Amino acid sequence: MRTRGFEIAKGYEDKGINLPVRKTKHSAGYDVEAAEDIIIPMYKPGIKPTLIPTGLKAYCGEDEWFMLANRSSGPKKGFVMANSIGIIDSDYYGNEDNDGHFFFQYFNFTDHDIEVKKGDVIGQVIFQKFLTVDGDVAEGKRKGGFGSTDKK
Image (cartoon, rainbow, N blue to C red):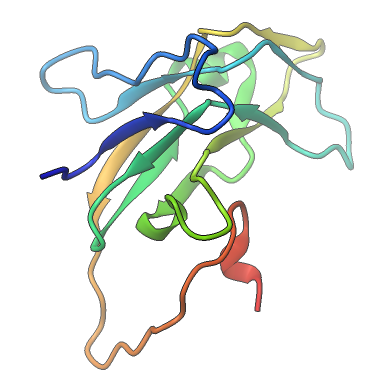
């Protein structure tokens, strides 16, 4: 029986993607690598965050979610996550309109573009359980991927 884990996303099966691993016995996060070379341009007002593909999808229990978090070295290198953390719900994986490929969103706060190479560790994933309140009646079904909980 599968509980939680990582898989290669559609379109990345033959691209040499490494599944995330924890580096130490007591690490909370699984280190995630970039799936391809990409440039994060230096920040200017009005610029949109750069989406870095991971080539990965992750599955977890219905009462779980996973967090995309920056590594402590990210801000030292000049890039920070545009949304501080990413929250990926369990139904993002394998729904009818979305395979589950997750991306990291970054801004670059240096005075030069930052080059990210395929295989560079760009962030980490931490799995968590969530709680609901008394009387919760959520019945909606996700259709789609990135930003799909905003769609009506």
